[in-house]
Image (cartoon, rainbow, N blue to C red; front, side):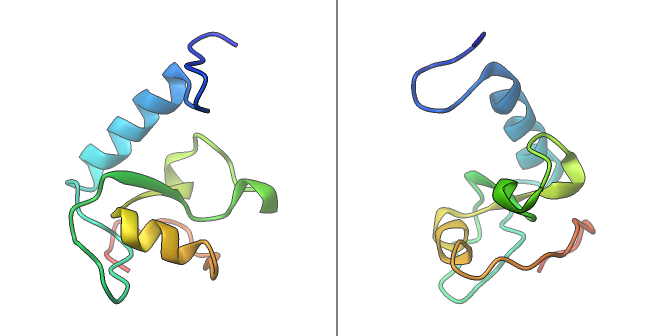
Length: 85
C-alpha cells in the first residue's frame, strides 16, 4: 500500500488527521471526565466496524488521548456538528 509505514498509518490518513486537528483547533471535541483538552488524536464518530467512513470529515473529530481511549467502550452515533461534545 502506498504510504504504508508499518504502523497502520497511510499518507492519506496523516493528511486527513492533520486537517481534522486544524479544523477543531486542536481541542478535544469529546470532553469526557478526565479530558486533557489538547487533541492529539482523531476519533471516528461511527466506528469503521459499524460502517463509518474512514476519511469522511463529518465522521471525524479531534480528541485527546484520554477521551479517545475512553470512548472506545461506548461510542455515540452522532455526526460531527462542529460543537464540543
